[in-house]
Structures are given as structure tokens and as C-alpha cells.
Image (tube, rainbow, N blue to C red; front, side, top):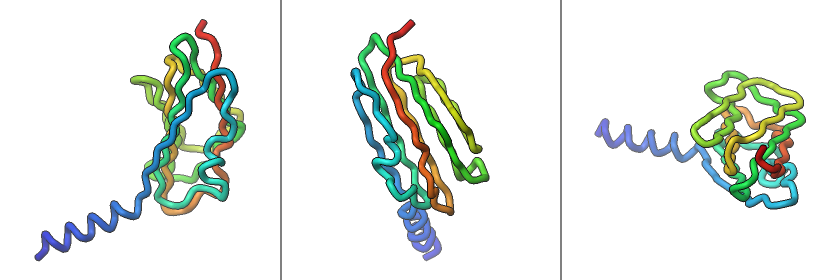
Length: 131
């Protein structure tokens, strides 16, 4: 009986955390405000959203976010950049954030906790030639 109750509680907890994934192929034109397109009214609580950007093998991706507003603690609210084997984690508010990828694939992940994020990061990405 205790095992059954534990399974029910675990399934309820995992069901309340929404995971979604989207991707885009960037060739010549930049992708603007891609988080706002999926969540125009802000991100709901307990959301794990990953946006993967791909370009041709001879290019890399430049990510620009004018502002990233996150709550604390870092264990609940994160902005992660996955660039091959490298992972960069941002846990606080940042202004004028730039990142240039090392590969032609870049994944940007936002994880939210109890409170909804009213302002999604207004990030844009564009392809640039490898140097």
C-alpha cells in the first residue's frame, strides 16, 4: 500500500513539471526573440524548455540576450547553454549577454520553479562564419 501511494505521489509531482523542446535551422537570417514566440505571456511555473539552434557546419551561432531575468535559488531557476560538451549556467539577472558557440549546434534551456517568469529572455541568434 505504501509503495502504491509513493508511486501515485511521484507521478503527480513529475506530471506537474512540463518539458518541451523546439529547434530551428539558421542559415542566413537571424532568429529573433525565440522564447517569446513560444511563451508570449511569460513562462509558467515548473517549466523546462529547450530551444536547439542548428546551422551549417562551416558556421557558428552568436547568441545575444539584452536581458535575462531569473529568480533565486539557482537550483530552481536556470538558464543553461549547451555547446557540445560545454555547459554554461546562468542563475542571476544579466544584461547584454553575448555568447558565441564553438560548434554549429547550440541548445538554450530555461528551467523555472514555483513562480512564473513574467518576462522571458528576449534572446536572438544569428549564424556567423567560423574564424
